[in-house]
Amino acid sequence: MLRLGFIGGGRMAEAIIKGLLTSGEMAAEAITVSEPSEARQKYLQDTYGVKAFFDNLTLVRESSVVLLAVKPQVAPQVLNEIREVVAETTPLLISIVAGLSIARMEELLGGASRLVRVMPNTPALVLSGVSAICGGKGASEEDLTVAERIFSALGEVLRIPESLFDAVTGLSGSGPAYVFAFIEALVDGGVKEGLPREVAEKLAVGTVFGAAKLMKETGDNPYALKGMVTSPGGTTMAGLKALADRAFHGAVMEAVSAATQRARELSGA
Image (tube, rainbow, N blue to C red):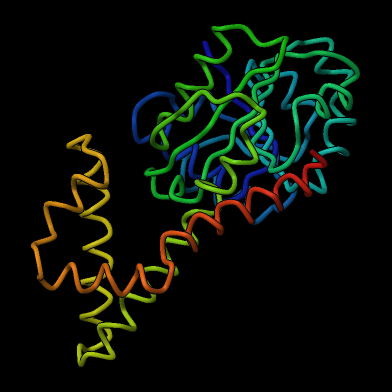
């Protein structure tokens, strides 16, 4: 039976727990969390029925899969702490630590281990995320399948080479912020034209959510879907021209590139 242990009990760990329990993929009895905050331990135990304490070594010994969900600045210390137990028990180790490469994890653990790196994005907090995964040289096909099962509880999962993870960060990792900025602009535009702010917010959120759902469910490309809304000489064309005049398309492309470059800098690539 899969025994899943989390090192770190923050918001993303909670989202994964919630997704696994909601989907029925795992039972609470099979999940353990090592978390330094006693208040957080109690919250996770009371809310989800999982076992929570603060002892990373015991957690690794008791888990067949260990999910590393700590801050990047803490990760090297944690990996150094657990390296001997990992070598003894050889669990599958899944990391969602931003900017921490598989090669660096292998170095900190003293050799190749069963490592899978995953990059979820913040919509995973409401079980609507998209996660990129890749495996290290010690990870088997079965290990990758286990990781896919876990993160499928949070949304969509894509296998992507680690060499593209910085670009994933620039697009889907940072992308929700670009969408929020667009929604904010839609709201402000509606208010400028006389809509009450609360009405503008509902219209903007519903429009973005519905448009994304339409594209996902139809499988049509954005150009075709844009054409469905756009009539010759109509209101949508006037709005699209205003965006084009202000280099909207290029600005979004540059945002992805800038975030990707920053991700490369932070990861040392």
